[in-house]
Length: 514
Image (cartoon, rainbow, N blue to C red):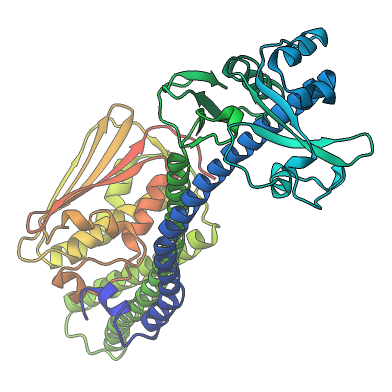
């Protein structure tokens, strides 16, 4: 029998192993491929988002310049209407300044303000106010003239026709102290204050800032081209995160999400794989269990039948020989009873129907009964037996039958797995509010790596003697369950070639476990 059952379970020729491989390949590999494509695509998408973010910021600055230009035109229109077209056509600065002051305007807000008549329009070009959509529409109707440093807007007469062009240029003081602050205070759409805009002059000095900033790191900037605003620059940044930081956070978050999904999928597949593998391993162990139990049942039954037939046919030469045959029949029947009890108890535990009857129990008496049951086998195999029971031990609350069965399993294992050195020692002693029952042998021992596994159901160690010796793999699992039901535990101190000491730890008093 191979010693590594897990190798057998997952062998390539095992249909269950192939099924697991197909399942993992069908789910995990496409997922990994999709994740790889996503991870390759995310940086490209992040780069596109970054470029789009800079374009949006640049467009925002362009919109701000348009809004400032419209605000300037609205102020100029209001002032021009107050001055009147005759004075505007006159064009003399002191006349216009007096008219502005008379109308309640500061006469020094304009560097220039005048009206050009129809001669400034292309011959045959007419338009009404409703057809003028932008300053570009006005410029299309003007005669070609050298570049100007003034703003231009249509002059609409009383009939609603464009009869001239109003040209103006605000003073830098008005632009800096009135126009720009009024726009950002009342007309700039920034409800959540997520955008910070700074206006600077030709020398780099800050003219206006929508919010204080920690440094001069702005995302985009733009020189203003509107004549009244020429020489100024707009700069924009986001208050909390820069465009690059925001895109980087999105990229890292997306990659982390992909990684988390892959991790969860991998964990799910690993759990599914582990469960299938464990079930396959358990199925193989159960098959081995059935084979071992069948052998365990056949051996005592064959011996009982052989010696019973010998006695029945009267082929026993002496009374001493007959008594020996009776002892063998008794021993094998006890062995058979123990095996059947183990299987029945395991079945009850698996079904959740195992019940324990707790009562004051003399531990020394339990030890004596177990040794009496195995005395013939111990003597026949030449074991050196040592028993130490501390006197005056108090009774413990225990199920005497279950406790005896646990001790019987330990003694049976000590006998089965001993090689050349035949030594068996039982010790019972008190330790505080506990009673300790120790079974010590000089057998093959248990490696450190297997000392917890041997308490698993159906598990059998990897040593060659273990596989040469038939067993069900249930004994130690039942011992652990019995001790847990008593509120105690089972401890092991063992090493290969040195033997083992199993200790049953019983509380002197404990609640009954349902």
